[in-house]
Length: 287
DNA sequence: GAAAAGATTAAA
DNA sequence: TTAATCTTTTCC
Image 1: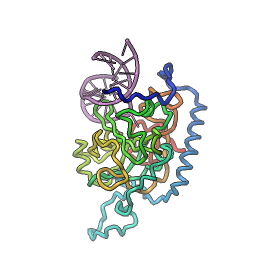
Image 2: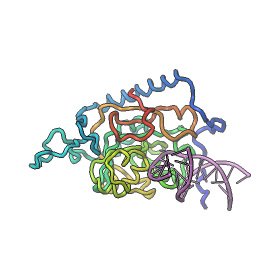
Image 3: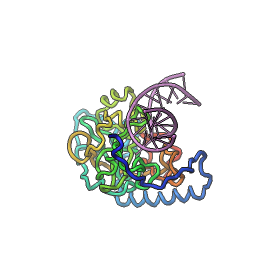
Image 4: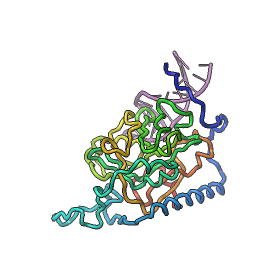
């Protein structure tokens, strides 16, 4: 009954690769960074970085991208202020946006918005998981849990980690390809009170949303949301947003069980200069 | 059918 | 540094 879904492994088994220590070769590591730098640079070109983002002045506010300051004049000029990024002017992304390689999609998701009702988060950190990737949940093939990963891009893949944390992924690439992008960190844009309530913390500091489990908790989602389409209005949506000025890259977190090749792959992307980044930060570098 | 491990977090 | 916590996948 439960074993009806038996599928062949999509990758070659690697029994003897249990890596305990880190690899020592600095040269290769440097090379990896150079390669990833090129990829990130390519992504930046395609993004046509608008560089509209104003550096936060004195106050560290919840949203690194958006204007942090409360308008001093209560005249409420609404959206006329050029320094204010109006969330309303952005529109929901179409499903086509997601139908690309997870490695390309990941950096493009930085700066985009996640919306569920009144709660809006801006994506600040992601990781790419791909076909033939020994760290990807799709490595065992299609199962009841991972089926959404193999579906068409633009859907959610939500799973429970350590029995407690709901991890939100955005499925990438075409149907049949097992690829997704893990949302590791976000910055709050609106619905701060709801976010704080769900998180059980009153803070506005990065501890509120820097970490994949925190994002899922802030959005109030469960594994029932897995396979939910993110390109249709209502429920959970991904909305277009401003691109970051600079992107940091580094190896993915918490995948020591994978093959060395994939452990060292620089498939983690983060918004440079944003405080809304999860630990560890010292493995992230500019391209 | 049982057991191990996990894309983590918060508190000590 | 370590406990908490439970589903998924694998092994016998």
